[in-house]
Amino acid sequence: MDISAVTQHYRGIIDEIGEDADREGLLRTPQRAAKAMQFLTQGYQQSVEEIVNGAIFASANSEMVIVRDVELYSMCEHHMLPFIGRAHVAYIPDGRVIGLSKIPRIVDMYARRLQIQENLTQEIGETIQQVTGAVGVAVVIDAKHLCAMMRGVEKQNSSMTTSWMNGRFRDDPRTRSEFLTLIRS
Image (cartoon, rainbow, N blue to C red):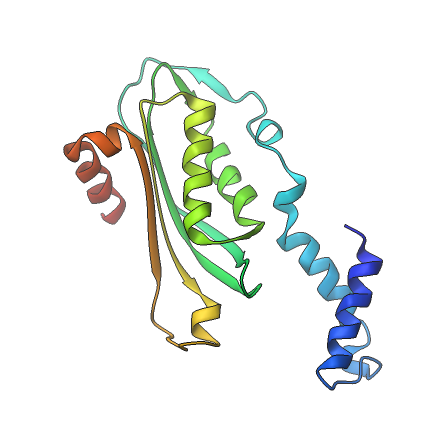
């Protein structure tokens, strides 16, 4: 990302809304905003391969593995406003498990892109499936969207829940039920 170019764009936006980009409080705001955008979209600079980094291990475990309450911060692609929530990710291993820290890192990689929650949920699930070869993967995300809180319908207490499930989580109602019960306990 060209920080200088993005800085100039932010300066232009500040001018266009009727502010003075040269006043003391805003003097360095365009550069700070550009650096913030670089951080908030760092997922574009990451890959699954570098995040997983070979942390796939042989295991005889065939029971559900769940990582709950993974905080996520993303920006909606429609308004470029944040949505903030939690992801719950589960998989049923088939001879291989993934390092514990890799699941939150995968969540972060996709969340740090301009995104809609529905696609974010699916991308996380498909990636966990791809790297583990699990017999089932489930992802549930619950998030609050500032585009619905600060503008539009202005509903402060609304949240959105999305899910993506495959394999045993999709085909076996008992497995799905166990997962949903465990993430709520």
